[in-house]
Image (cartoon, rainbow, N blue to C red; front, side, top):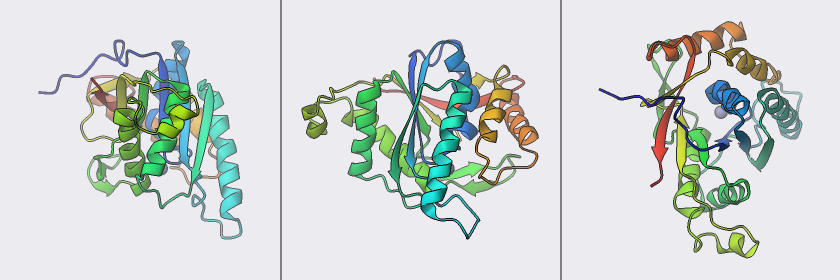
Length: 246
Ligand SMILES: [Zn+2]
């Protein structure tokens, strides 16, 4: 029997960094929670790892134009949710690997933002349940790479001064992140009640107008949040796997 954590007690930290592969990933996975945390007075920051440049079916546009448009859409979605700032690493969409270089760039942002909580994809989720929970679908390899590199950045690389000495030389002191929330997980332990913010989540997703989305979008998002909420008796929820680093 799994014991679920209370979303009024967790996460405990007030400064949150959300790390994701593609513009719109954070909205699908966590925008209801992000809007709620921001409304509670927490400081929420976004880190977009890839440029999203492969996210189009339009053969007349260029990857650079797609990336530029998607960055603007991501900034607009962040504004809707009350996110304080968005960082972009600009790695090429679709071919991301959990390299030491990627880990270092995430450490750089962690040491700048100094979050108490990091939120990112579950790197162990090779397969994910479909919306209706009848089938499994493959997870995107960029999501796995981001989850893997982010966990490695949190522990040990951001925390210990002998990792990434070039960052310390640049004045970025080590930083200990206390809590990690993983989304896209088959083993959730924290369900966040998003009853008050699911409409804001939909509004944030509407900012990603260049993307193929479920039709109608609003009903698909409510349905997904309902199905997650059913597990714990909430009208609408988002699910995370809660990890502590000590
Ligand atoms: Zn994605």
